[in-house]
Length: 221
Image (cartoon, rainbow, N blue to C red; front, side, top):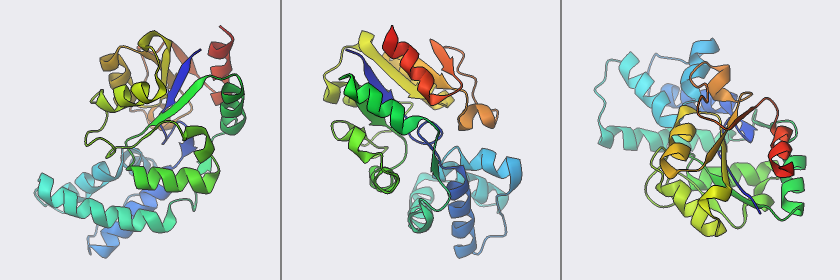
């Protein structure tokens, strides 16, 4: 029996537009002039809320420190909560593939760098939450986030899985680094944010998939 643990953004759900819009709403609220737009804006947005804020602070000539970033992140999340599923879409084949894996009794978990509240809310709205009842790890669930391997180890422990049976499925360098640090198989999603915006290649992956349903090839092995 295999264990499939998934990243969220760029792996299960295409969230880039809502993340960029939330960033721009936060910038507007903060009365900053900077805006995210086009390819370069999305390239920033897909790296997460804190990366969006760092970009904004640099553009505004503001010094970046952890305390300020933490406070600003709350503003970003408040805006993201308002539009969390406005444009975000499940990637083709995700629901059916998760159902097939579940029906075959494979273990399924989530390990994302989105805060747990927002991750649960999004997957609830999109109808995917049912697959992750046993294992749901957000960036704040245990106090550390990827690429620290501890969240992934927590997910593995929740699933009571052996390392050799684990396939961590993601689309970014962060996901790849996490899988490598944990010593588990990495599956790279070429359709996701990382490859699309030229910030990840998945060079250490055991397989690089163009469509989500290609995971069933692993299931068949």
